[in-house]
Every structure is written in structure tokens, then in C-alpha cells.
Length: 319
Image (tube, rainbow, N blue to C red; front, top):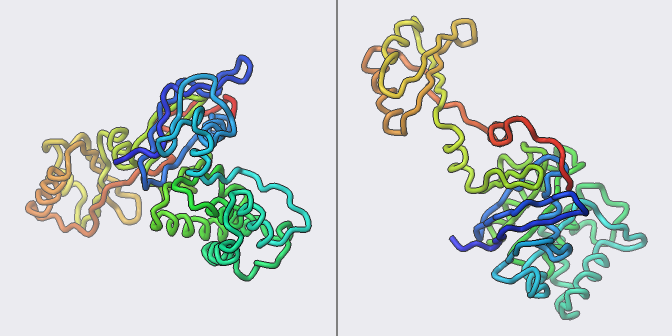
């Protein structure tokens, strides 16, 4: 898959403080890339370099094949950037806000009106076209800012903490909007220090801490690499101990635990086999006469991944 973002030994110093340490990052075209890390990990610094707003102290970065150092104008055409705060625009209507930025992108005046209407419809703000920008709710401002990033039809959207400060409903609306943008072929890089915000929308993730990229890749591969064994929860009718003896000592079975006091009572099987071995495990239980009512692997989430990678030491650094 073609990479739309590539960095090679990307480094940034603030005085004597190392904010990015030889960052080597790849984001495939069409991905929703979750950039995960605590406050001060280096997420915003990376994004500002990729959008040409900040020069690196060393290394190189390319966006859509263009160098952020030597081809800044081409990079800016390829990127739509949504910062983590909304600028102050007093006495400006929503359509005027978008029209101002459309003019900044040299979009033909004859196209602007229809384009603005289309983008307001995309972010579900058509009814706020003539509303004062500063009178909009936090969620509406975020959606308007996202519409602004789309004005020049960029291939890559870089969104810095877009869900910060949003209420639960606004977060759901933002998540659905991002899914729609991906279906339109956009690549999205989205940062957050709140892992649950990214869990349901990312195809790829990068975990950064104190300026160091600790892991990067598609979610499935990273989960498998960090989870060499899996826990299967098995509900059975009848005696737990009888079902446990059917699989205890079998290939790939590391441990079998009987949990009689939970509701419902169940087995936990610690297992390190592949999917074919899992199928054989279930077949063994059934062939032995166990009446299975539930058989499922416990799924790790992004929080589990983050804690495994950082080993619980996710503090400090410069943003």
C-alpha cells in the first residue's frame, strides 16, 4: 500500500529539550491513523511539522511524495489541518468563515457558494449557514473547522485532538463524520490522549511517548504481536471441572481456570494457538460431551495496547 506520509529520523529540539527523537513513521493511503500518546508526547509537534507550520531540527518528512522542507506549497495543497483549538472570528457568519478560507486557497469565486453549501451539508451545518461562528456550540465549531479543512479537497486530513471538550453526542457525530470522510477516499491522521475516542475508527495506530515512536502499524498486527496468547471464556452447562479436564494439558493450552462464583460460571482458557488450533479446542470440548453455550476470546482494546507498549510509564515530555 502506498504511503502518504513518510518520516525518516525526524527530530525536533526545543532548546535542549528533545521533543521528537529520530521518528520513523509511515501512514498508508486510505488509512485512519490514530496517533496515540499522553499530553506532551510529541503528537502536536509531529503534526505541525507535517503541515509545514514547524521546521524539524533534523531528518526529513514527505507528504503525498512532497518534502515538507523543499516543497512546502505542494504539501499544503495535499493537507487539510485541523488544530486543537478554534481561532477567534468575531462578527463572522459560518458561510463567511468558509468563504474567507476559500479565498485564501485561491478557489474561484464562481465555485465558492456551491462548495460552501456542499461542505456545510456534509458536516450537517446547513441550518447554521448564517449563524455567528462564535455563537456555535463546541461540537458545531469542530464540524465547521473540519469543513474548512476540506475546502481545497486535500488527500490527507490531519486532526489534532478533534474530540477534545466535546460532549458524548458530539463525539458520536464526529466519529460518524470521519467514517464518511474515509469512505470518500480521504486519509485521516487523528491524535488523541483519550484512547476510547479512537478505538472504533482507526485502521492503523502509532504510539508515541516522550518523542519516541514505540509502535506503529495496522491495529490487527499490533494486537497480535503484543498478545502472544489469548484468553477464551467458555460457558458450559453442568460441571465446570469436567469440561476443564477435557482441555487441560492439550496442545497450546497454557492454563485452565474455573470461575464458579461469577454469573454465569465459566472457564477461562489461556491459549497460544492459531485460529485452526482454536477450532480444534472447541471441537475437543464438544466431542467430550461439554454443552457449550458461549465460547469467545477476550479482545484487547487500544488502552490495553498502550499500557503494554509503554509499560505504564506514559508521562513527561514536551508537546
